[in-house]
Image (cartoon, rainbow, N blue to C red; front, side):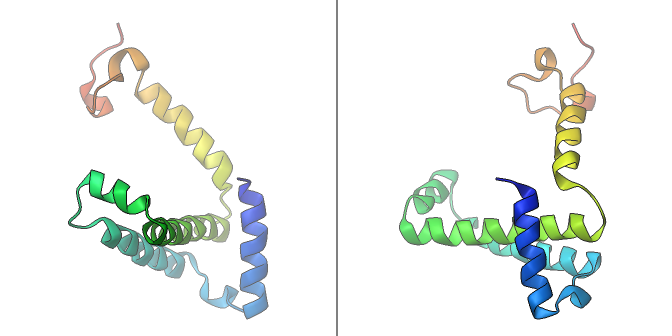
Length: 120
């Protein structure tokens, strides 16, 4: 997936409808929260295996895909509205996390980086 292609399509979609006036960082973030809630609702009260089974059905996969796409597109739009290169930000964050969670200390552990101890 190329985020720049997604962003180009989202900008065109928004421009065609004159919606940029509504797409402020705050409004987009609130919309994102709503979409995360809709995604969570599809998983609420189900076990992990029940969620996976739901995702293997046509209706379940479509519903989950729609909500994931909504969440992703709002993230892309929020970053764009703030002038943040989301692709670069994601890569930078992975690099930061790799430093905070060295493999020799974090492999197989769910401990927060502040609880991992000192490197070997």
